[in-house]
Image 1 (cartoon, one colour):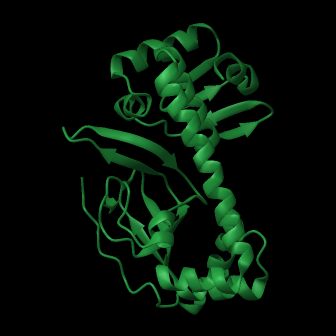
Image 2: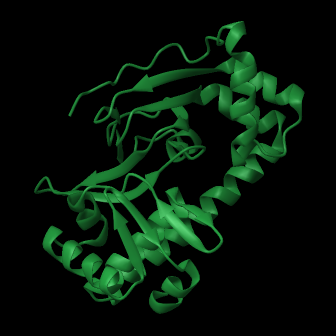
Image 3: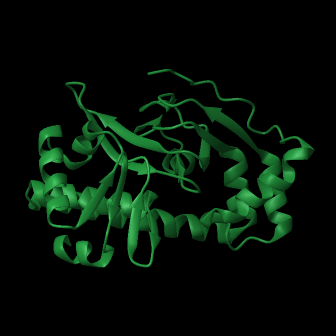
Length: 245
């Protein structure tokens, strides 16, 4: 994979021509949803945007955390590697999601690596700037805590799935996780564009590529999902969820 580890001067403000676009993006990020326009302007001026090619390593596990990252567009995977070099995917994040929050708060090293699954653009805020922002605007800290709590609940669900469910249940749980994280829902129908590779799905479900293929095709035969190229469609999200949760 291509390595792209350099982090620019994150305190450098974006060009004035980019302010309007950056403001629109910041308004769409849940962590900043309750912030007034004057405060949003401050956030834009302390952040910087950077693009990454597909396959680029954005962060490495155990490196020092220097910034908080928000996804302008694209998708990334959060991964850890075991002692034998096997990759375990913890989650896949898409537009308006963020990562790097734990190191920002406790100052310790990164707990996982982050790799760009597609061409990706990030908005980065330096640790010292974000800590000051939380002090000046308490609603940011509250929103961040809400988002982190939601992630803890998802992690608990994932652990339960891996430890208690059979292969079919684990694969279904991964599909539901992707639906919630990067899917688009329309009238009860969920579309997951650019479905991760079978090996990535296997790493998320703690199983093999062969099992992923077998289980997904079983779902297709039952009419629960459709597969169109690399797009997966859940025909009836609530029904699918009720079968496996």
